[in-house]
Amino acid sequence: MTAKILDGNALAQKLRTDFKTRAEALAARGTRPGLAVILVGEDAASQVYVRNKVNACAQAGFHSEKITYTPDVDPRVVLEKIAELNADPKIHGILVQLPLPKHFDSDAVLRAIAPEKDVDGFHAENVGALMQGQPRFIPCTPYGIMKFFAEAGIDLKGKEAVVLGRSNIVGKPMAMLLMQASATVTVCHSQTRDLAFHTRRADVLVAALGKARFVTAEMVKPGAVVIDVGINRLPDGKLCGDVDFAAVSEVAAWITPVPGGVGPMTITMLLANTLEAAERGTR
Image 1 (cartoon, rainbow, N blue to C red):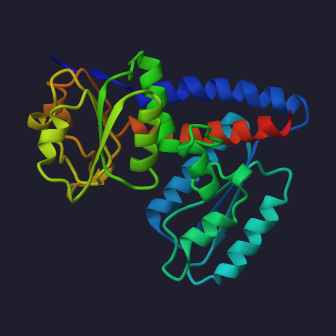
Image 2: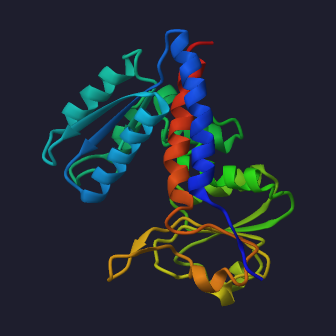
């Protein structure tokens, strides 16, 4: 068996073409979707992520603003800027790039973003709405993964799904979305005993651990759908995921590559959330 590839680049391009058309229709009625991205500090990875988000906005015909601060900025300055953006009708989505410097209370910063502009889906109000099955915004990475399932025609009803990782960004919202799609869900983490016991019974396996090539072929059920969220840099500079792609591809039915899998979809769904926020504002 050789797994079929879930191509994030191809699906992202397909969706972004639709988003551009929708954005143009909005602009014709006087509203251009707007995203503000706040970057604090000089973390190289964060700078790349922010640049990619701003570029994606430009390509889709969105308005975007990048606001940068030095690492030692007073958190009150950032909170004041968020309040200003909350009141700005040109801005439909606000994103604060994480992680923030240690002198910041990240939870307080996320709470400061107006829930209707929280396009990352991290505000407690939006997390609660997702828990109740009535999401305003779905966190971007899990949202993109659900798009993979829909595009490939993968029916999740009754499937055994295992999520490796319990972060607020991926693991927890991913588990909620899978449950809402009628899968039976197990969430595994660093304290899980006999991890392979759980992964080997998974019809759908989502790996979001941050450990390079951690998931081996022996841990995967033949015919499973394997979603690799991890992005790890090897000593030679190459990128790899949390899944041993070459070996697991010989066991799984579907698999996402790294790079070119989940990554492109995460930014794409940020555009989706921003566009949806703009469209709501015109209704």
